[in-house]
Image (cartoon, rainbow, N blue to C red; front, side, top):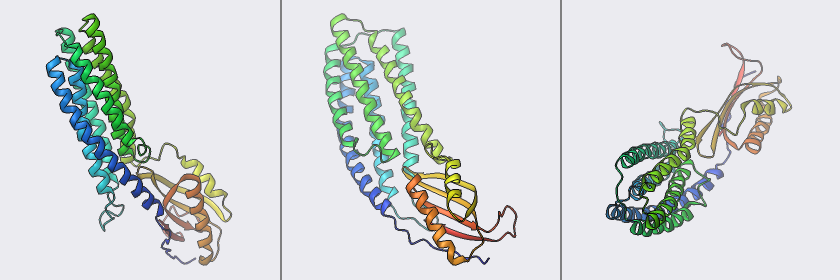
Length: 316
């Protein structure tokens, strides 16, 4: 059976839709970045005046938020750049690198907060509860506003999800600081300040582990968690005319964009008949697994060794 290569005429409407979503995400990120910078400055001033470690910790968290949001914005912008001869998938992976860097920064700042909280427990300090409370209430309002800017888009991109987690973490921190301010104002129990800082840091670390893990898995080209390679093989082999599917690889290019390569042994037939079979495989992958980029090598027999006959067909 002679070899023949078919270029896909499959359009990329999904990429146009994704561009629309990321454009909205960029606007949300810019708005969230603006209010985060303003609130960060306010919390630094308030933390210094009130001598509150919890407030300064929250300000430090907001500083990483500002960096994270800035990285997220530029990563989304670069991700829309067209593919080049060297970077055939474009710059999608910048989004994942940004998400990974965001997660690492969050963990580092959280560990520093834990260290400072430990020092404050050993050497308690007087905290101005009223000022701490006022600034924390303003911070909570600002964080809620920032989260509203991103909530529509946090499920469309791992990078935007990372930025959204930053904002949610800040909101939770502000709630803790408010509680601490109330306790200090009415009871004078200053130890609550470092204890709250510890809770904030631990909460941030727990919430960030999933983001870092998913980013690393994507960069290692692991199969997406929600996609079973065994199930894909079974579904391909159910298609009439297919004998076997093997060497199946599935990976994530960027958030929501999946790719697959596979060898498929088919019944002996004319090359002209392979197009219909290929369309059936592609349709199943798109509808059943949302895999929109695929490269399928059709073969008349398993070609683990050189010399076996095959037809290489790419679908993108």
